[in-house]
Length: 307
Image (spheres, helix red, strand yellow):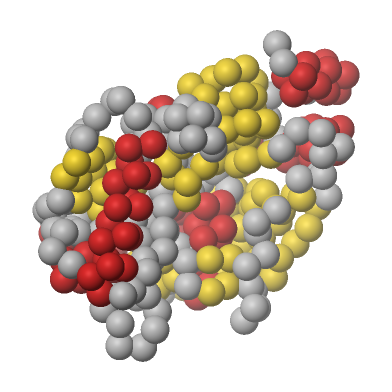
């Protein structure tokens, strides 16, 4: 047991909390690429109050990283040092009143979308096409098919890494393209959305259209983490997949990692040797696009841990 693990065990024992933790825990099953290194400390808190207590007791001694469903991350072979937090059942809830939809950060986006459909709540149909969680969606302003989280976001309840409870309200400064500008050091615990009643037939139609479009344009039943690179938002610039194709890289493959022939902005992993090979593959794509087209692609996938 190393120093960080000893500190955490003392925090856990002192506060008599009920969450689960493991040391040197392999995170492969927590990445949609199916491969990755270990968490030095892996912790699933039982409730917001427990997480707040643990973070407060930590006193910045141990670095904190939060993961969600693992649908848009690469976990490097060297693993993630410090405390890795994955929000569990205590953060998996949905409710609504006449004005607001409340969702715990661990709720899957598609589950929230289905809930809204069942309750004739319009505006969150696009979440049916995002393979992640509510917390992750708020952290990266997730979106697809012309809609973004900022369009339906009211506020988020968060904890700082020191256990301080904060609220982030929607504003022009809060969100930019595929980014939340104020959540780097905060843990999203709950998100509140606009509750607007709509026609359930229209809502269901939109969800079906999104599902059909995903099946037609994106790879299915493979180890992938969704869109790899952000679309350049400069006026007139092609989308990431178009830039990759223009650089002559469609279907490119190396060391068991490839670009999907279905969608050039999706990396597909078929090897179990190294998560670093996926990052290296993506960096090679970025380098080729830069050399051939003079445009620098930015990662949309989050890269975590040590090499």
